[in-house]
Length: 137
Image (cartoon, rainbow, N blue to C red; front, side, top):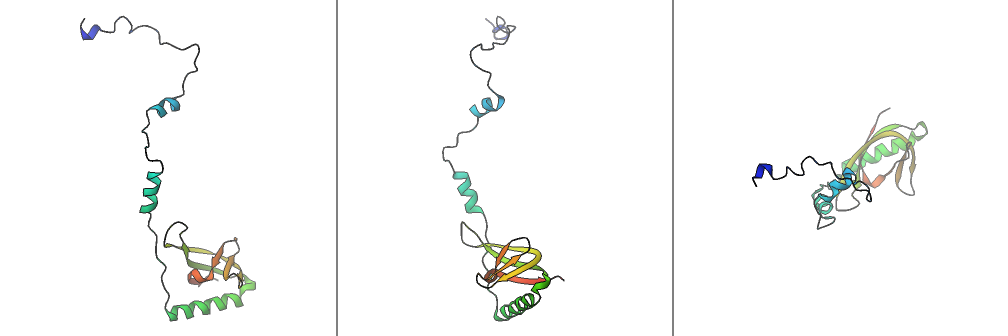
């Protein structure tokens, strides 16, 4: 039998549809052929290891004094809910280091007990992590 006529006897038959089993969805069929991940979580571990973090910058004594003066000014004008831009260090929860984050908004209160600034939107910023404060209004 020649290769080109090999399936002539079945090529025009109707497609078989099972009467007892439901038709499989495309997603289910595709899942049969997806690659097998022998090491579950390996990709996530590699991604986490490759994620970069920054290290905390130590302020000089002059920078600390300037920051302290700015904090005192904010405390004085607190009833006005001053609008500020604060840059602070947010420690990473999973590894050494963290990231510098800049937020802007109105200061609602300064919590001396917890050493934190509470923004009007509810965000709490640790005073010990603040790198810079700029007053907008």
